Image (tube, rainbow, N blue to C red; front, side):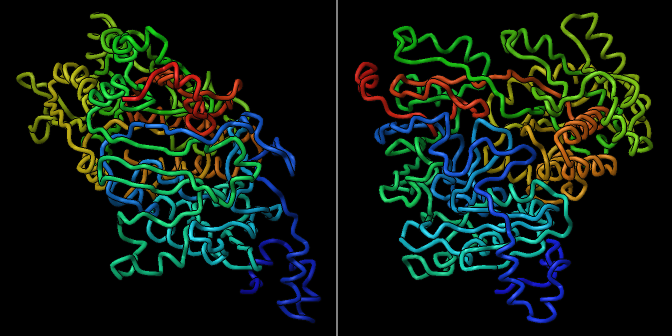
Length: 629
């Protein structure tokens, strides 16, 4: 397929070559354009990549790590799907499935927003970011030995864009994907300036077109738009060895994996097998860890971390308790107030629900004082607001002044503070004042709509006992205001289906934020995503000021502008009171049986110490720790 005139115009090449275009035609110009491209081994959002072309391996790996052993990990809930394309919209995707597929690029874990060639040996884009071209490695192969082709890449892109709403939103501004060389694919954008789009496309899992267009063992034609439990044909370091639907899945390292000697893979993927055991109850999962049925547990309960790890293996140092700092991301965790519900359309009502939330007492009684209250949508990063807006941030906010609460400019945001009876009573009085302004009043100890006389009722939806435990602590504060509260816990499948249909009043949600936010902000808070099934805009935000600030983030021209735009968005989201912010810790709590080793210096921006990616089986430690049960 030849380059179109439109894609050449967008890259600025036609302006230089129009005379030869007119004389010799498109094929000549396409060949010339290919020669003009500046190829790179890596992409980085703003700064130059840390690793130069031809680097031997990432600094944070052990290139001599042995390839051996088995690691057993915990997965929550269940699974009924091996189709990555539908992971967000249908069924429950099996844990670890992405290990079976490679992406065009792979991120380094000691840099902010830098990616290096994996399936792609080189990448190129014009200075205005109006397109990006990837050149595939000739040696890249699927597990059946067939090469990864440009057709596979285009098929994968089209499948994700058509069947995955979140990726459809990501790829909305990619107007064309076309083969522009034997192993080259060019993605053309609808406008220049979106610096993140090339990196986003670099994260695309490349699927085998020939396999998906074929038939399974029974002769049934495969369908990329349907869930499936047929083990997929991949091209990554692992493939499915065995599984029990909904209960367990085992991946084996591919001995003849095409990319095992690439610099980006040296020292990674060191285990012979990755095993995931599924648990529907976190208490049962903890007991399985204690009984040596699994090797590692990421503990998200402060209570468990404080009280449940005093068993003999910990005292004997056969089980290691570690805390790894979270440096690669920020987060907002809170109760989503579904603004599709009439009662939550009013920001005064939403603020009142925050006033009823006594974090300080909850932290003391439930969390052993380990947590701090979240006060930013970018908590834990330099992107979080501070003080009053000034400089570039103020300049950005001025463009939406008439569309945002006045407090954005005049008052630093703060959550209500409880922790003692006097403070709680003060918060409740303020909450009732806000309810009265919103058209509610207390009658016979019930908070009712003044016009209809109906009591305010709310259901807090959860999916496990931890959700229920926290909601039960929150409930009395709402009860005292006269709100009828129902706490409902459902299984994983029902929970996901209700979220996809926006069928909830309140639910706990976590939005993870990278250190370089971008196009995903549309999916989190953008107006278009509010009605898009499978999006992360659970709040239902449709706010023109928010949309404007999201675009300022996406099209930021440098790091300074990106940080300022994120801080501006942070303030606007907070002062609209879309969520009741909850709590955070700032570290990953990890318990593991002492059978493994890891590099002395772990990557700064990895989660959980990059376990198990750069860890390895240590036979000497395993002998001391004892035989697995």
